[in-house]
Length: 264
Length: 305
Image 1 (cartoon, each protein chain N blue to C red):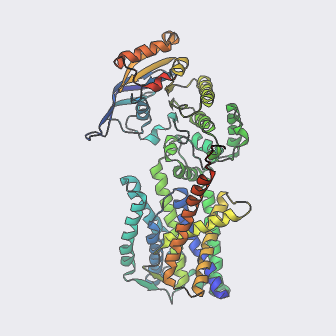
Image 2 (image 1 turned 180 degrees about the horizontal axis):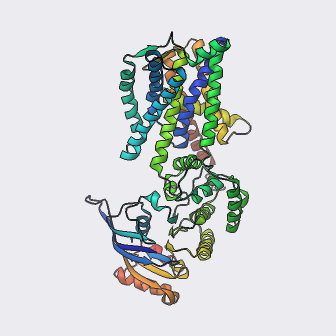
Image 3 (image 1 turned 120 degrees about the vertical axis):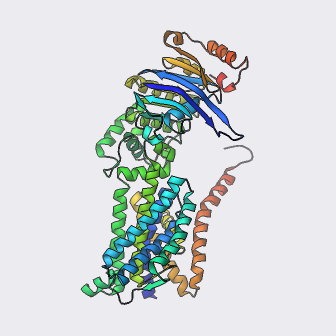
């Protein structure tokens, strides 16, 4: 499905601010894999997702999706394969546009846009039904501006938008980190049900160890631009937070580098 | 006095077409596109030269003015998207080059159309309606047509993508929209309308002048701002897209009415640009100051909500 080979990225190369972010990432995801990604701040988790999405050009290496080499494609060209949800709820939706307009934009992801109507009446009915599955009462607010929604509602909407047209790969970049615990739990629940329902191949970055262990069939841990731990299946199911903590202490030299990692 | 007011209304309607162009870049893309001053004059110059020197049909000359404006918008768009030149600077670069280009087009600093047939004079001759009234009618027909066209366009897939680009570029790219393309399209469409307005104004005032577009962007912004304020004062708030477009044209009419009134009151015409700038500055400053005031007022020392 997704194969990363020797993916490297250094920011601000050749300046005093030079920052190596990814030091050769090799990763293969099978179809339907739901992989959670953990690691301290600056481990390269978000950078890895951004490299897959084409936000920055690769320094070297290869990104393949479903047999296509997408390494040199621009961000908007890769969008046809990818569904993305970001940490900032403002980032995934257009606040000045209506809920149905946002969904209509998302539904046309990766399609050629022409002079046909941007949204049709039949679509609206579909959206009403899809929104109802979120259980947030948004199905009655189709023509409301997205800017009127709360962060959690926006994030749930973004999740729906990312999966409205089934993506080959779903990228979730700490998509619950900016939400309060109760809303975060609700959005995670939605995530799980959407991913399971469509059998989506998913890469989810999280700071929450508990969620990382609980969700998905595989877990990878990153540190300083490398994947340092990769566990799946039964082994993952038996994983405890203490194991992860131990692993993390081991690689970071006995030091608990990130307090945020402890929170989970 | 009444005659002056009627003249101001038709001027406002014709300029309203330019305001609609500015609306696209300023309100939808959030870019103050300074190309406008140049592309407005370009539309006028191209139109005047074609009518006077080449004897081209005045309707065709309107089309040529529009196409010239579209080309100017494309230059700004490409400078901005291909070379990452900030939009405002890209607009200034095009505007400055257009000054020279417009002089080249005309060969001198102004071209009178006194003896030439214009779309207004031909309709006036054919129907017997006075030219002042024809100007108003033709302007209104154009304005309505442009509003309808924009309303349709921004409802299409490309149009929605364009609005999304102005609203959230990051999301747009994640949804597969090439934001460079949408920005260039917006700038072309916008300056095409500006060029059309320049050509119309040139035919209605019967001359093209190198300075006819100077301060155009400020007039556009002032008209949009006036239209928004009027919209907000109306009971229904007028938030729908079509009413925002209509408000822009109404804002333009009101702007030219205000202008006619202050000129009647004896203000120097040269001071009008200062007044326009003040209107825009005040309109931009008031919401910011108001919000700050609200924030300060909502602060309570004791901590009770």
